[in-house]
Length: 235
Ligand code: ADP
Image (cartoon, rainbow, N blue to C red):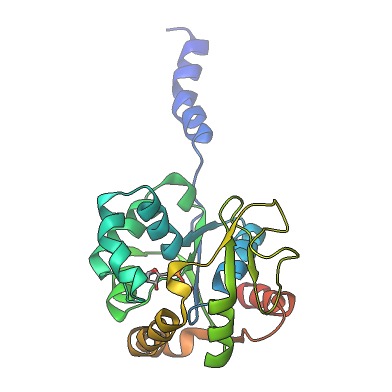
């Protein structure tokens, strides 16, 4: 065999390996917690872009399944509309499936997960050498109720506004794209109150489970101020 061919054969595996995207040794995992409508979603989009990691919202994953009328979506819909948590096994399967995809290897920002101690324990088992940062956004109940019941989402572009704090120029119409603004079915007053109760009963214990690992941030401020603190927390 000529030395050129031999050299090529020897370097081939390394050339191939170089072409495959390799994951960092200690990918960053940010767990963003907080009561419903604490601003997790808005901050998660911005922070995940800044950190160049994948934003994973279990609420969005579930709503996407409902929209596509998958079996899982059909099972989850009733719980969500009633302001209850979707059973752990459904949420775990949907989340871990998504985390197996290659874009999750560089790191993830988890928004709305874990919401029960069982979910937190499952996550502990799933992770091995990741660097995990746990953040909780604190917002008083009365603010949560106004934020949720006033929240409107554009059906076309997904932009979010609020009928109390940032009303659209024309009622029911998205300022950004002219699409139709809708209230989420689980943002009705009664459901929001239920979600808050569920939060205190089932998600507050997760904060106790993580104890002093949790970085507390005051979420009852302008989004930019909250974001600066979040950036600080992950550095
Ligand atoms: P919010 O943060 O405003 O409550 P989300 O979009 O995170 O909204 O969640 C909406 C709903 O989806 C929840 O009320 C719950 O029914 C369901 N859900 C989302 N994440 C989870 C989870 N980790 N475990 C169980 N249910 C979940």
